[in-house]
Length: 411
Figure 1 (tube, rainbow, N blue to C red):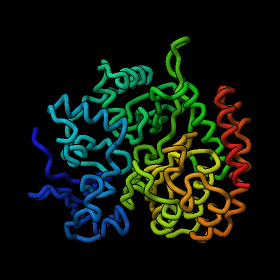
Figure 2 (cartoon, one colour; figure 1 turned 45 degrees about the vertical axis):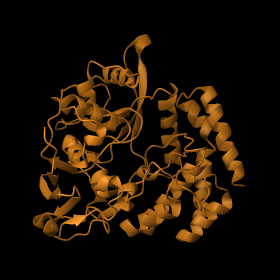
Figure 3 (cartoon, rainbow, N blue to C red; figure 1 turned 45 degrees about the horizontal axis):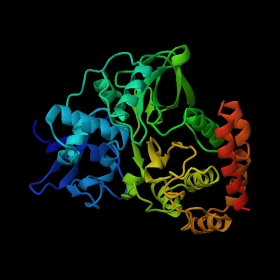
């Protein structure tokens, strides 16, 4: 197999442009002339909407790939599956795989609206999906074993980002039937993502994330529909957190741009602050209301000890009327690096009230105290929400103690 040097980029059956490499290995993108007449800017300000070939504005980041296309690639779990697939098919090691090779492997299975052609053929997609079998296979793979259904795991779980194992599927409205998420959806089905547990995760992980989702709704955050998916029978039954995908409405795909891809921020390092998140939201959406949503998300992350708040955990979605902040996602109890927020709050990884006030002043958020009290009102209901969702008393107490300490620190 030869390395990929040219890729066409499509959205909803329309050619957006072309990616290619020059003799020095640099990656260029050029918008298609027809897209320039009828389409939109994929990444406002960082992928200029003109006909000239263009390098990434930050060629040292993302292997020289433009941020909006780097968003199509998985990390963590999905990257592990992709590397295994390339090693099986070509013998290539991870460092030998180019960004365009990876995009060709993702092909039409990327999150968001973008698709890449030519597509490296993947395993045949099965009509039905056995979640229990895929969960068991994911566990085997994490233990260093070779699961029997590795190819199906690579197809269903190869595109999502994040460190934890997960798969994208089509669930029936009653969640009693599961189909591949890479076929045309029949009536009564929707696109969902199902999260499995990593080796270090407690059995409570799914229930905790579901409780956080309900707490976020009470705090005024926009959240996708979430549920606990029970799979297997009797003593072998297990349950996993499932969230409805906001980049899909039926068979329609929506363009999504992460904050990381938008501003070329390395999500593996604590390199930005919430002022950047809020100002970037204002810049791309041109909406004070959307910027205030980003501020509210900051408050929730602070008050709920969600410290894995890196640059890929903020995103923007392109609607017919323009850009808006995406619904919140990946909200759960997490400790980050050295128990610090990955995205700082006025320079602090464990903020006090004055740090929040400084962010509000810097970003012109006038109603910050009202928002703080609304979010606080929701997070103070943790024990009741956790009990409602069946979180174990031990986990509920540990999280409740941490949340109470944060609440007290904010005065």
